[in-house]
Image (cartoon, rainbow, N blue to C red; front, side, top):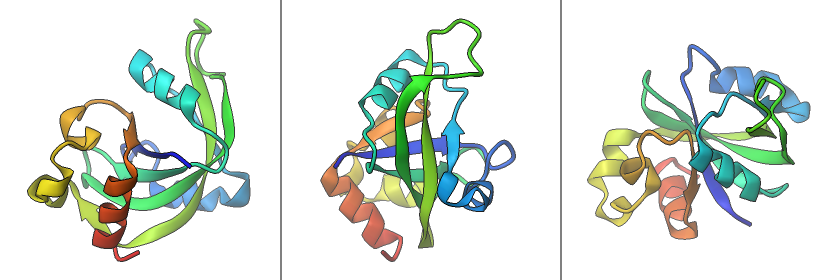
Length: 137
């Protein structure tokens, strides 16, 4: 299994909206960065992703599951970009704030810090375990 982090501004698409979609999930559309696209193309059904509220909140709030592997993004008129379907798995008991990630020396190499503008990012197994523990899971 691989681990990821997906970002969304809560005013655009929030964790609560993702949860409301239930088991059918939702297409993760609108990604227009080629590096993020390549990461999405590596996502496999069953992979897990941290759901991160960007700009507003700046915190990891939940864990989502990839339920459908990449396919053409229906919102992309150019045909260059892909999307995946994700569903909410579970919320973190305690949201993990960006400042707390930055303070933990074990997470210094995390893409959330190093590639801060990227909306879809890989997470290592060690980073996953650390953040889950920080979040009370």
